[in-house]
Image (tube, rainbow, N blue to C red; front, top):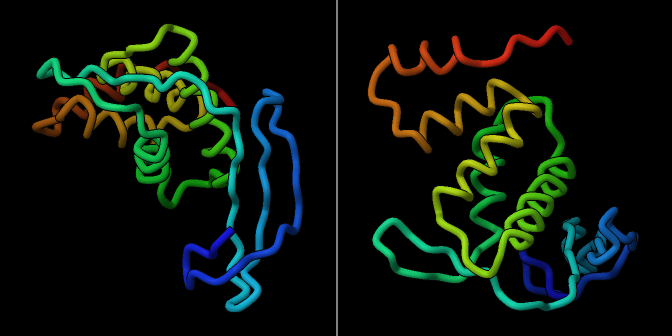
Length: 150
């Protein structure tokens, strides 16, 4: 496997099977620049298609889910490993619903997971996903959050 930073070969440091059992997670280290990164191997199955608002269809891209999660959880006490696990769970749940999924369903699936994980991350994601236009919309969304006593 090539290093995403410098393009040189890497070596495997650790190999684990994910909880679902159908994904292998490997921690790797570049032999040239010592950059560490994670790769996932999974069985290739029928691709999930995303139906956009316009009706256009495109292949599901799990990296878009991960980018959305990372952005929402920026500067929050949530590990990247937790976000990777969450992303895989969301993808698995969506695939269980069928071969095609509406883009709105993906956003809703992310929000459903974030509200339990971190309410600040949830509001951040919701503000972009629901296209909040003013402070009152933020306030209404926060008032509708379930009150939790951790």
